[in-house]
Image 1 (spheres, helix red, strand yellow):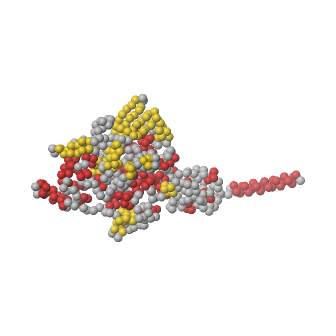
Image 2 (cartoon, one colour):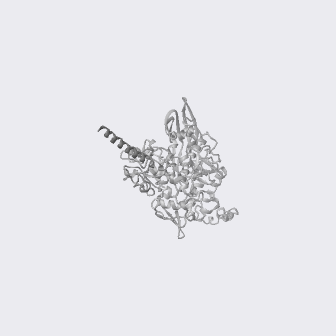
Image 3 (cartoon, one colour):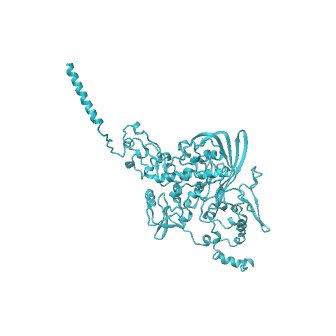
Length: 585
């Protein structure tokens, strides 16, 4: 009996070993998946990221990684990343489809922030080369830097880096970074709903970074940061308060916003924003679009990029002829030529507008104004933050946005003289006359080694303030305006043929470590007080100031371009010098 039982056991064991041997040497075939991946079994209610990435095709693992064959949570989530669009992960996941774009973004100004860092080091006297670094990656490992400019950049500037970790911000409403999602995310993740992405980027995504320095985001939408208090006082609280505690006034917005409610992306091209694959050191090298690209456009048939962008947009149909930027030949697929008419289509909803083209009237064609940038006449106001008091405590501690941790050294910032008025004019980086405002006027106090040190670095910079209006500035507002000349605010006069100026702001009485007015770019004798950070950028010289003011004598009477002298200005000048005009009789 026992012997029979033993034989039976041995027989069963032999069969089991035979079956195991067969299966062990049989090639393993993954289970048949009825969905793009097994993740959908648990995440079937998850919404699509956008219409271009439907989950029925992409599933979850394509973008997030993990084990798409696993049927339990632990195995399925192994190796998964929550945000594949962070630039650390985008080169792995997003590059499967967007390889060229990821390479371009990695070299873009929004990723490198080279412009901010280079200018800061140059203006603070730590570098003689405006192209000394390529940005954040050059200083990433130098946590204990002795450079004040780099320390300031790390603590006060680098939070706008698109690779920043949004969870590092104490206030979620102020969060920035996250890679691709920093710009393309249009709603936050909610339970059973994926965050939504879109190529139709809302202004709020741009303004969360572009609200300091030149403040173009705020200015465009009609917001001006106040000097530090909220008005009016309503219901027991200050009104007009921003999420970061600053206050603001309402001002006239840019005409593109007030008239057509245009978004930033309606003008700024994909190449101009996301980079063109080249390393740039400053904003004007990276930027692409100019006013003439829309208002005096050059047309051509749509290329493959235009077709892709139009398809992603979903609101704008392809046309036979679209505009292209002159600088980088980027397609402006929303500026189209249809039946010999130039039409503009708003990207967020496809609404059509008839585009106003540049005229050939004297104010655009006269040789005397050929040096004027469009912004010189069409930007009547600019936000100007004069006198930024920066205080540094060597023994303090503060979050380092490059190292992503708290490090030694703390900065505090105070304001002095904020204005939203007519800007100074000067010769810009493009050799044209354009608005200038404080690039970074730093008056520094350094508490270091139980000693107090002081330094100051006052700079002016030229840019388009994004306060564009259809009606241009008046002739007088430039030709006999001390602010426009760069002299600052005060009383301008002509005595015995000499230009005189008496400033309102007295820097000495205000305790400043310099004698010239804080809002002055230049003296009436053409002495430039404040530095610039571009090769060609400068204030007007004495000869230019005299020429500009000298024209005022004619402008008193001939103050509109409808005046007959501007129909043939060269002929009018000839008659004037020959003494044949009525004003000399």
